[in-house]
Length: 247
Image 1 (tube, rainbow, N blue to C red):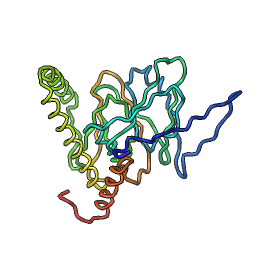
Image 2: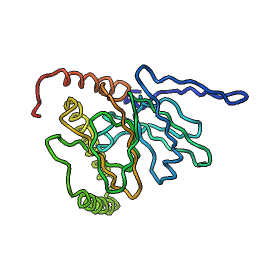
Image 3: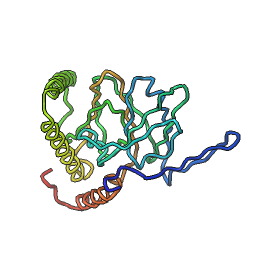
Image 4: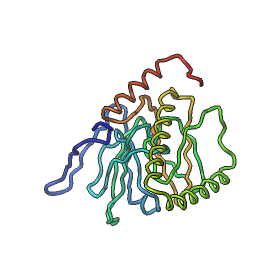
């Protein structure tokens, strides 16, 4: 509850006899996007990560857990935690997840090696096989994406090989560095004031990636819990400030 890991309880609705239609509302101005997680799994896509307030409902064969954000996830989520979801082992029945967003939600499919730029705060869900980062709007998109992807793949392979030889202490130091990097990303996102940074999302895996974007995202989301309240408070101070803070 302190870090904003999610709600404590969910409501389950079931019919006692025959199937019935149930009308759901996502709030004024919001629309609902129905996502079939079995289709994503059939497309060899990894689990889906999404923002907690976007969640509306899901079928009973959907597994959901809250996971802490690393620096990459923090770039688009801007929260300490996100939800991770995937269908259960049985893929014979549809695993439906419903997310709510402003005005319209659409899904973009990103092929391996491709990259996209998104307005900061408009991404509500991505598959776990994307790498994202904040890039100042004064910098152009890298032209040689394939070379950067190959370089990252080699460095990642070297890191995996080196990590097998490291001790427990080095693992703790690596986690602390990752936490510091994620905190820096969140701070940069708060002081960006929606316009100084874009979110660069790249698929560096061998499977297709999916990104869900919503329109008219106005408020800053910093997660739930006490940490989320502090993040949104600090964000509002930056948004009301007329200081450029170096940008």
